[in-house]
Image (tube, rainbow, N blue to C red; front, side):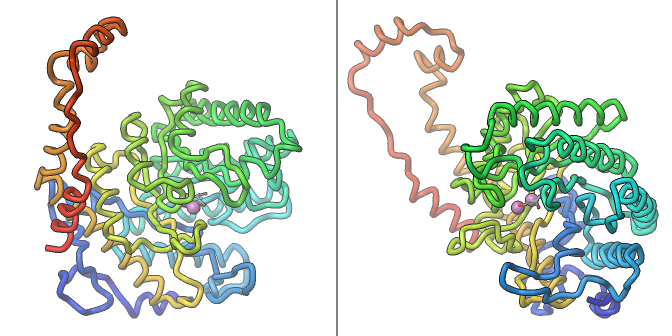
Length: 438
Ligand code: XLS
Ligand code: NI
Ligand code: NI
């Protein structure tokens, strides 16, 4: 890939939904004020460093299809060229934020010390680019899953030296997050789980993991990090079973270990479906616990069934996601990170730009439609009415938690057979279609 190809495309502008110019936004109009805020502030789009600037299209059966060396051979120069390309890509798309793993931004050294020194040089470089291009760090994370040493886990490794190295990488990445004024720090536990219980002390692993999160939280707060620590749940892949299985599991774990004040959830769409949930379910679960933080926007392929990280195109799903997000009060420290990659044969700079345009337009349209649903009011009104029995009489006592089991017993004996009303699912689904397609 060449930066000149990016410059040839130039800045992507909003041209409205009828326009056929492929390098234009059809729905995303960043400065437009809707529902009290600019679209860009509702959506807070972020570029994922790993998919965009590092991944070259390899899979289990095939070699790279996209060259991301950016015409450099020296390792440090290559990583600077990656960064240059990334910041210009964000410029032409009008993306204000980015997210990275420690290993995405700098080349590895011969040992940990040299690796950290190279990392520091690249943090200086990124700090310069942020100032030059007016970009911000949404979140960073430590990649404690790819290297061979993490094959049995990192914070859940049976090997204490591996645990220490994982902790050192987290410390280094928290320091970088603070320097780059990032508002989030993510833990995604790709190897924090097990392949078989036959070799696993699950209790020890979970306790060690909780302690790891506590140490990281305490260190970050001591250094003045004011943003969110985030858990990104995923049920499986690469491990057979991941401990952060889904949002409810992660929240239970955080509460048990008294970490819930500092941690929130980074919900990924494709991880929700892998866990057998909808994205909407995961967002609602986080929101009702006051722990909704950020999202990784992507989608899976229903026929494939793993974390394929497609760029999001499903407006139905994006609408329901934005509906939940608006109802949760919108993003504060979080945003929409495109944890997504183009398909392997979509291997040009043009493909990358077109994929981001589609993803951003999908969420922009989702936002517009979610607002329309809220303003329409029929869904809210229906749900409110459906639970109306809790606003009076015995229902009110239940809602206020002012009733005994004996009182309910007496009441039930006198109440007679209740008239239970229809859930009206098909009608409600038709409202969504009406809002989406008219
Ligand atoms: C992988 C995860 C990963 C995290 C960051 O499935 O989505 O990309 O977002 O480590
Ligand atoms: Ni992710
Ligand atoms: Ni993922």
